[in-house]
Length: 215
Image 1 (spheres, rainbow, N blue to C red):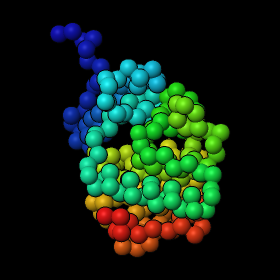
Image 2 (cartoon, helix red, strand yellow):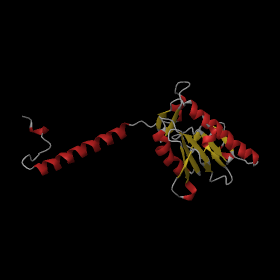
Image 3 (cartoon, rainbow, N blue to C red):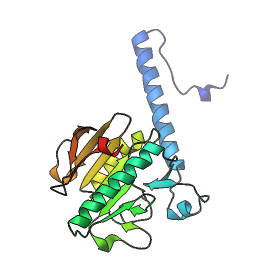
Image 4 (cartoon, rainbow, N blue to C red):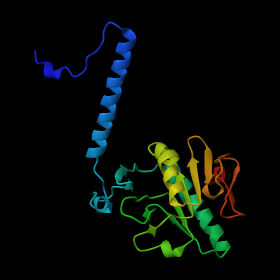
């Protein structure tokens, strides 16, 4: 027998010791697997996004590509109506903010490794707007949840938008019939509003909307 392959000397006479040894081996194996996976993970840039087949929608977050599924009817109806209401409010107030629906390129950190397409982007600093899209964080972002985007909208993008400097973030969830509002400038817990309740905006003091009325 080749003794060189006997790397782990288990003590089978003591059950507790054997379990500890097995757990240690299992932990080390998993840790090594994760390290190897990270080492092999390719970092993508906008060049890779531009080479995707025509009609393919995807986002780029920290160098990783995330494909986007086509939205359904309710998603599109809420996005259109909500964007229209926000735009009408800004026009009535003679405001300078721009309301831009998806698909619209937002380079949150003004680099080539993170690119998102929020359902609604409200940009009040027009110097961020170029032919490519928005270079930097919009002031206000709305994401309408789809079955395939739930984890992304509630977790990944929430952390991303907060760290990038977005001032306000709404997650409109037609499946749970509620809107979750993050006002990052206030450093407070999110507020949750049922669809039949008026949702006030933090950055537009006298603007509020009942999502149920848009359906």
